[in-house]
Image (cartoon, rainbow, N blue to C red; front, side, top):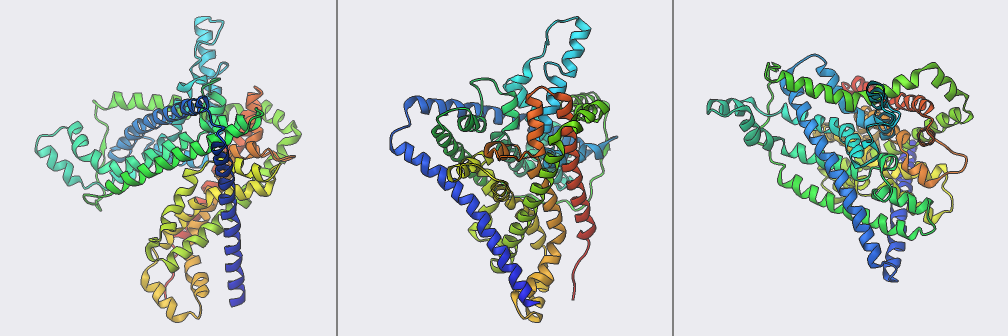
Length: 533
């Protein structure tokens, strides 16, 4: 038994070292080549102006997308946390959509609804007898902002609702006694209580939009695009890949700067005025609020629900499914996705568990600098940067490169989920285990692993969904004779085969959502189990 425990511990350490190498080596390659080009004076004034132009565009689309997500996230959080209404649970359930639905499906839905041959344009052309599509905003920065903003607003809502429900009602009641109206209460009390949640969700959404690839690639205009899209084009569509390396370190520099600002703001706004342990009685929507609520529901339906519904409606038709199943690459793509995503999820959980156990066993409360900064690694380095660095070491990518690169980016998410469960282990349980166990590995396998098992299942489902929906790494690695389902959906959509793309996208979405839901339910079932002596 002790031999097996030591074997699996050493195996986990080996896997983590290999995965860490797949993060460090590609990043080092990119920085080394870019630094070499800078030292040799290959960066001209025009190159700097070009980088500045791309940076401004990337910041603008990410900023306004985040602003839109914050606005609708605040409105939805207000109604969910403070009011009682029909389909409240449905609105709250939207918070899992950005976690388990790939951005590619959102882009596909927007094409089906707002594209040149989309539902809205066809309706206007039929009503007003128009010969051309009247709505062309989708293929501009405004289409990118709308798509990303509405896709990410549930993340903001989830953060705000969790915090809003902990605000003690006595603050609001005291303010009302002093004559303050609801708007003044929000500006002077509620907003400052929600500030940590605002900062956390805003930076998360901003970085998602900053590193956005698929949406910008599909909707971006010529000459106006983001870092990720330009890096991809520099690698694949030009004979001068040196630009990609310079752009990669520029993007990474800006991302690190954003994370530095985030950690500073979070530290300064982390204070809390109190916690509410009494569930607040929610009120019905008043007559004054009803028109505003109806308008909010209408906008949410058009820009959030309708794109997903359109993908499902177009994809579920018999003709779309038949034409998809006739493709010889479909079954292979589905198999490739399941195998590669399962391997990535498994390795991510192993690495996350290994680091979480190390933090719990050797550094109380995880106060070591590595365990504080580890969850920020994937947020500062994009998939495109890792893929670019891998191609500097090998001529052609492989499935192993893809799996290890995705694991290098996704394991910190698993670590964060698993460590939150291990952090809750009572100290007296660990102290008793130390007295009764011969070795530390015995404590790990008998106490810590069972405690974190349910969180590991949920982390596995989350990592699977991220891997299955990833488009950037498979595209940049361009693995010979390997096409996952996400790339199949992308190729069908850019070749204007929308029915087949929607059918494949629907299957991809059901796969991601199904695995995520099963892992979450398994977490709830196992989450009630405890260990006692």
